[in-house]
Image 1 (cartoon, rainbow, N blue to C red):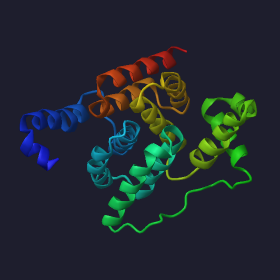
Image 2: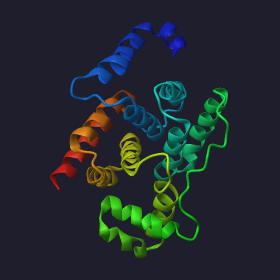
Image 3: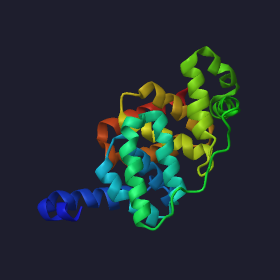
Image 4: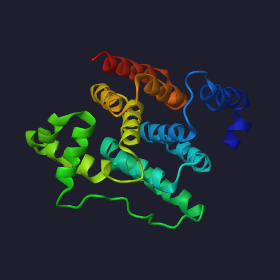
Length: 229
């Protein structure tokens, strides 16, 4: 970023003022620092902003996020972005944590076993989306994988609350674009977990500098759609 201040001073003056002062300080759109950094990191994963992620991760750690919280964001991104897109971020996270003398691996956060991951994953789905999800895994092998792998392997982990996990999922989907049906469904899931319409609009607002206006406006439309249902 320092190099850009030298080569592109006018642009960086406006960008840094907008992203680091105007947006975080906007009346009615502020988030606590922990939530804002979780959302920003998830958004950078979603939009594949690896260079920006390398710059922002140290700021997020200095801002109060724990190494465990950061790792949980990266791990959960696998379900929504795939390992092909998550791998560079996992490597970058390990490099930055190691450079800050954080001992790896971090303490384990898993709460399920290979034997109960499906059952516990379906329970997590039901807690977020309703009791009907307890049987949704029976609809086919993808649905079974979704329950056992996405929810059973990751959503059940400690380090983040279910409400925080739904929030970062919303960010993964909003930032990558083209997932509006899933985004609307997870906006509703967020609301079921207590993340209100106003809260989600604040999340979108704080992430707008990293994904631009089109995807931000699409995300707000999905939030409004979910709120109407």
